[in-house]
Length: 390
Image 1 (cartoon, rainbow, N blue to C red):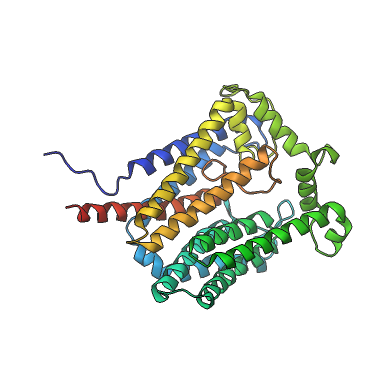
Image 2: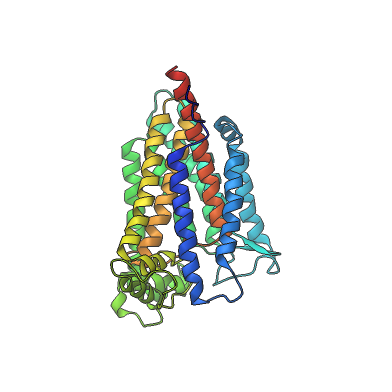
């Protein structure tokens, strides 16, 4: 008799993760030849973080999603508490880097709390929506507004402490995740349409002020000069100086020089700033060409497709797990679209990494934490399906 495959062996999720890790290590290996940071072996460091991440993923499989549901407020509170501690910390352990106070600088490594807050936010928002749907069987305008109010408060706290760093990119990720979950929570479409229209008007107004009245934007809205430069470069590339467009020019040059099949390993020629982190996609383009970048985009599409289908499959039996899938999909979608978009010039440049590919301990561990939660949802779905069809 053939031995039945373990529920803990989710082959599609394992294959996608192995492929993403492999691409990450290959791209970072190539990026190292630019020698931006001498004496650091980023491949070994990234491998270490992935080993830790895989151990965390395995550990997360020992806990049911019901326990994550019950602990969601504690996890969310702990991650927000780290943001508060970061804000209050002295320069000795939380100094500014590139104008932002976003990291704890600890002996041997750095830690970016906002990355973990994304996972805490997804957990708690998913729990709020699930609990609300359990209590409210017949939603009304009043109950929908109460749910929306709770979600705004929950996302508003980390946004506030992230904006003071300042880190506009991460704040937008929080808001995007929340916006996607608001849409999927079943809140009345009239409320959603009003909210979306208001946000769009506000965003267009801010961009208009930055472009037309830069002094007002800087003095009254307190928008930083480098943030204004990124918006202006994105809005009108041709009107900016070579210093303002340096990053995007180099990124486009690297992507274009890879042509169809790329230059291969150990053949990078374009000096890219932060090649192993923010512009890792450009390294993929120069190394492996259009075929390589298309393959990477396909990997992300397949992963997001898996998250959506898994979320739909488990919704009736495990609504909390379903919202975890959609929340994590939203996180990946925002990071992927923003990071790849900025490398090809259709989005303003931010410090948002390309999850799974970019180098970074905090981003890798946060990505693996989220992946571990989704993996647990898939395991429970497999177990329930097995019992259902016995």
